[in-house]
Length: 103
Image (cartoon, rainbow, N blue to C red; front, side):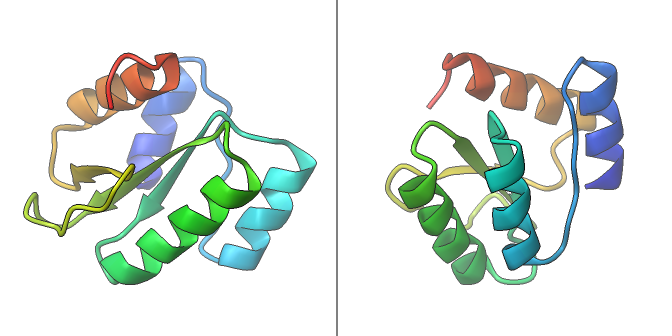
């Protein structure tokens, strides 16, 4: 995820990073993001719950969950991408989500 953050920064995105959900929510209150990327490779259910909380508190924010494999369980209104997508494609997917071009 660190490399994806670097590539996003090179594409003009401001990037913050944290591994703690409470810290993430505090960062979002300080500076509302356009896109949040969650790593769901350890626990998809936990990432999905956090995505739901983010969407409830910040409905304008696009939340993307990156998972280990493409076969992660689908969830309504949850954007899921395989972790092993090429980084360039991941950046393109994120840019499309940010612009509202993909769902």
